[in-house]
Every structure is written in structure tokens, then in C-alpha cells.
Image (tube, rainbow, N blue to C red; front, side):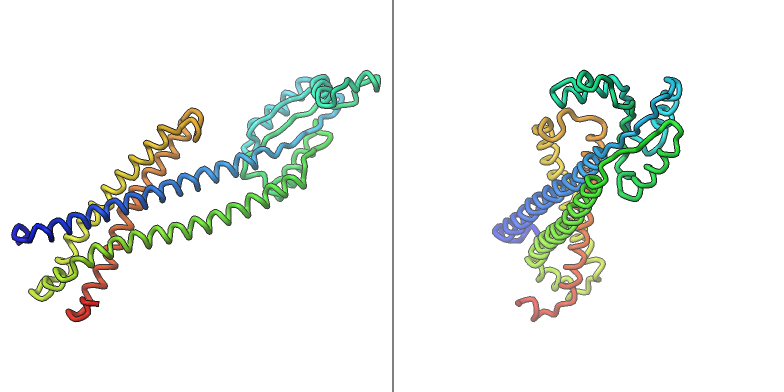
Length: 292
């Protein structure tokens, strides 16, 4: 029967599918960009929190072997990201460079202590963890004092928490809007074929029989839209990789893979779910309701 349709109707159906494909592709591109932003926002928050440093001031009469043992113990712990040992001479030189003058000549001695600077993993930089680790470090016999900027750590954690919450709310709203846009696109597509659906019902076709071709098309629509959206995203990442990453390494490739899989999954799931919901609505309509 399809071969006997007027050319204008065929062209109209074809154009509606092309328009729907373009709309879904563009929306999936936006969803991919949103996923990319969310993943990198988490990495950025972790990077900021990992800049909170702790300084372990060491006792003045320590032997070198004790310092090496302590640094090794700290490096092997699961909460320390990096360590840096600073002896008294290095500490004096760095402070003199910051002050712009040699304070040891004025004082006649070097009053500074040797120390170990620590960088912690982001998961251990909240206020409770920092207090617990401070007490833990003070229990080491080599450590005289533990120093870190408590107010700065609290401020960073509070701001990161607020920004993360705001970003999640905005992302949730955008995801809802994008889902609504795809749903409306598919609704218009099925609306153009509502009389065909009603005719199939009138000749005794079951609901599952009617749904089958529409669900197949929605899968194809979501799949092709996902492929096109990923090609656009990957092209953007390829041409702007210097601005985005510098040089892409294994970690960045994993992020790109997550975004690609997310876009594919959302393309299939949203298209299929929207088609199912819209079809159910049109299958319940009576003939005279199709004109409204």
C-alpha cells in the first residue's frame, strides 16, 4: 500500500523523520556536553580539594633514617597523595626568597624546623577527616606539630559542596528539558500517523502489533542519533583537545568513553520510552478525538 501513496505524503513522512533525527541528534549532543561538564566538574572539585596541604613539623634531633622511615610510611598510606621532605636549609632558602632578604643573617641562626609537606586525596579533605588525620600524625614520635589552614579548608569544602549542589540541580533541570524536547519530537512524529494507527485498530490489529514498527523505528532513530551526536562530540574533542585537556592521556580517554556510552544509552532509552508512552496515549484515543 505504501507504494501507492501520493508523492507528497511520502515526502512529508520522510521529512518528518529527518527533522526528528536532526532534533534528537542535537539534543543528544547537548546531553553529551552536559555529561562531559559534570564529569570534569567533579574532577575539578577533587583537584581543588587536593590542593589543601598539611605540613608535618619534625622534631629537631631526628636522624635521617627516622625521617626516611616516616616519609615511606606516609607515602604508602591510602590517604596521602604525595609527600615532600623539606630540610631546614631548604626551608630557610625558600622563605628568604619569599621575603626578599636573608633573615638568617639578621637572626644569626636558622630558627626553622625540617618538615614534610603532604597532599591528601580529595576524599580525606573534609573537616572531620582532617581533624582525625591531624591527631593521627601527632601520634607519630617524629612529629612535633601539624599545621594546615583550617579556615581555608573549611571554606573550600563549603564552596565545593554549594557549587556541586547547584550544578546537580541545573543538570537535573536540563536533563528534564532535553527529555521533554525528545518526547515532543517523537509525539509530533507519531501524531502525523495517528490515522494509520486508528485504521490498524479498526481492522483488528493488536496493540503489540501496532507498537512493533514504531518501536523499531524509534530504536533506529535513537541509534542513528547517538552515532551522529557522538561523531559531533568526538570531532569537537579532536579539534579542541589542546584547550580541553592539553595532551589526552588514558584518564581523559576513559572520560570520553563514558560520555560516548552515555549518549548511546540515552539515545536508545529516551527514544524507546517516549515512543512507548506516546503510542499508548494514541492507542486509547477514539476516532473523533483524533481531530483535536
